Every structure is written in structure tokens, then in C-alpha cells.
Image (cartoon, rainbow, N blue to C red):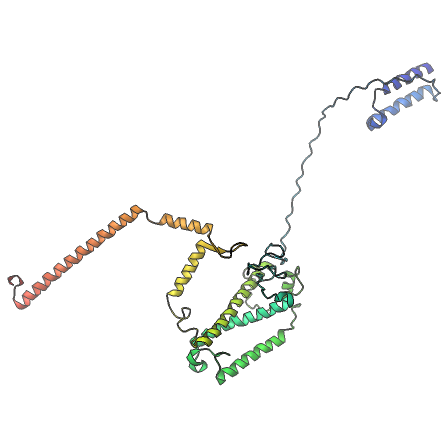
Length: 390
């Protein structure tokens, strides 16, 4: 038995020379070696010290031949992409241009640092640099108040001159003003009106909007900018017009931009009214196409609309005033060209017109001959003189 155990041991040790090292034997095959050793020990009993064996000569190991084993294809699991909900807030900046870019309102100047389009009505216009010297919110509040007052005045001024009694107006039918002068009645009325406006300014100059409905909404809209809400917020919207174009932050900003743009135009307009009447002594409604029926104003409106339907005016960093045709305008012009008559159509139309003119001439000649015959017959009947005898 001892001799057979020795032969089995030498046989296993010789086979190990052709096998990979222990570190490279998979754990699966390592498990199967345990029963062999256990069986050997069970047959021979306690292991005895074996005689030293001759060192085995390592023989070259055959190169491993790669075997392509079927590998299960990995299943591609498509993870659904959840789109992020749009942020219903006003985010800083609007024009996507770096700091130091040119202003939109004044392309020859750089955009002011604090005027990046975040707020309504911000087009980068600040040639005097007031946004760097004063509080931006305070200036916005002052501008919107003056804008609203000017919008009321620019309507009331011409209405007073058109509908007001003569004793209310100044010489030449001009509305009472600081430059045109006042009579006692209009003076006290003006003092009362400005007194009421001043009282409103006093009561609302330090108002808080943190607890109002619109104030909370505006602070939420502007939370990425500041905690001041929106300038000019009086929580006054009895007709619910503020959400008429959309109940979101961008729609509300759009309406505020419309308001301040109209207000700026009104401030320029009321200044022009006062200067015109002070310099000329004539009312603004006198000989004006805006206040008397005429064809000039509709013609100008039609021309302006037609121009904007075909062309657009734009500026860039190289040119200030460029007129180019839009794609819609180009298609419109092509459709008009297709609808225009060709040379053959014009010739046919001219021939038809010429034939109509000839027909009209013949008709007029026949009517004239018939009239002359009737006149001759009446003369012969009334006088008894035959015109042929003459």
C-alpha cells in the first residue's frame, strides 16, 4: 500500500508541471482537488514522510487556445428621461450676451452692467450712468408712476381742447398748463388734482406688498433676482387683466413691459404737447390729422402696415439701420407677382378697353343723332318750317 501511495503521489506531482499555477486555477477546479487528497489520506492513514524525489524537469506548456464561449448579450434597459418642469420664474439676464456687450437701445455704447434685460422695459438705455449711482428699484418706482400719470395726461389734454367749454381753455383754444397759463377756476382745479396725487404718493411711497396677493406672486416671480417684488405694485387689478395673456411669470413680465413702453411714449408725447403750444400758441388739435377726419392718417397706417409685412429694420454691431426683406414678405411678393397680369393679359385688357371706348363713342353718336332728329321734328311742328327747305 505504501508503494502504491508513492506512485500515486509522483504521478500527481508530474501532472502538476503541465497545469497552471495555483493562483490561476479557478476556484471551481480547486474544489475538486480536495476529495483526491482526502481519499489518499483515507487509504494510507496518517501521512508518512516520503522519500525525496528527483526534481521534475519543467516541460514547455502548450499555448492556450482561446475558445469562444457564448456570452449572453447584455440587455439594454432604456431609462425613461423625465423632462424637468419649466421654471416659472424670471431668471437673471435676457439677451445672452456677455458683460461688456453693446446696448440694444444705443448700439454705439456698451450695455450698462446692471441693465441685462432682467426687468421689464430694460433695453440697456442709461447714457448718464444713473443705474450705477442710485437704487435701481427706487428709479423703477419713480418711472412707472410718472409713466402712468403721463398716460392719463396725454389723453386728457386733447380731450379738453376738443370737448371742453371755451371758458376752460386759454387763448387760442389751448389747454391750461404751466406754460399756457391758468384762469382762477382751472388753477384751483389743478391744485386740487395735484394735491390728491401728492396725498396718494405720501400714503403709498412706503407701502409694503409682502401680504398682498400680487405682492406674493411678484416676489415668487422675482425670487431669483431679489426679494423686492415688482416696482409699481399697488395690488390693483379689478378686471383681472394681469393674467389675460397667461398666468405665468413671463406673461406678467410681458404686460409690465407693454405698460412701461406706452408710459415712456406718453411722457414724450405730453412733453411735446406742452412745448408745441408754448412755442406756436396753437392748440395741438388744430389742423391735426389725429383729431380731424382726413385721408392722410389712414394712408400712413396702411403704408406702415404694408412695409412691416414685407420688410424689417434691424441693426447689428456693424450697421445701425439695415432694411431687409423677410421670408414672409418674399413669399407675399411672389404671390402678388403671380397674380399680376402678363403682357398677353394686358394686351387683351387694352383691346377690350379700346372696344368699350369705341362702343361708347358709337352710342353717344347715335344718341346725339336721335336727339337732333327729335329737335328738328319739334321745331318743324311748332313753327311749320321745314329745316330741309332752308
